[in-house]
Amino acid sequence: MDGRAATLEEQAKGPFLNPLEMNNPNAAAVVEKVRASAYADMFRQVYGPAALDDVDSAFDKIAEAIAAFERRPLFNRFTSKYDAYLAGNARLTSQELRGMRAFEDEKKGNCAACHPSRPAADGTPPLFTDFSYDNLGVGRNPHNRFYQQAAQFNPDGRTFVDRGLGAFTKLASEDGKFKVPTLRNVTRTAPYLHNGYFNSLRNVVDFYNTRDVKPACKNPFTDEASALMQRCWPVPEVGENVNTDELGNLKLSDQEVDDIVAFMHTLTDGWKPHSRGH
Image (cartoon, rainbow, N blue to C red):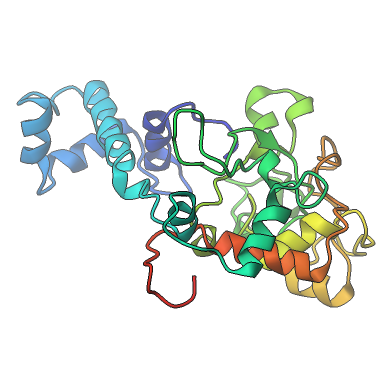
């Protein structure tokens, strides 16, 4: 999300050694656990009898195995109602069609600018991400448990600011930017945005629509529910590089916000022609 890993293999290694995740002291500890596992023989069948002998080589293969699993069709099913619609095998409701049009319209939601919704030239189904990085201007999430971490892990406490891509490129021009996520199966992936500020998909769209219209909350640590009650949004966690060209004051009506959300419900895999709902 913040650009620290360039490949699936590289990303797979991170959680093993992260003190806030799996907290293994080093790669050797990870390899030793695989050696002692019930699937060690299966691992050797795939990578050879000596696959777990050398720590560095074994750690690379462990990451390779995880990445291979993540690349399986299981995670790229493309079985949503929208996929069926693109194939001519489903009809969208009037609300879903309105939502799709608002989603794609440059003068409305303009969501497709970052979340492309049409198949590629080679027929590849739309991935609903352009893989770019953006600062959406979301505020701090007061429920972020990282603020309560010991000083060993978070010496800044509640003053911590997640610089996102900028923390790894060391460029101030990239501060606050995070990778644009896919919207496929988005109804199943709450909480939303890089720090989990939003629990409601509709509130995300409302934020995109009114971020620069509503006043700033007095307390920068105002959570989602309180912000809605106060009709404000907290100031951005990172005030620089905020995208003001494509969101913030979309001038969408409440109906158009609901329509876009209805369209995003059609992106959930597992749709069946005669199933009720989305």
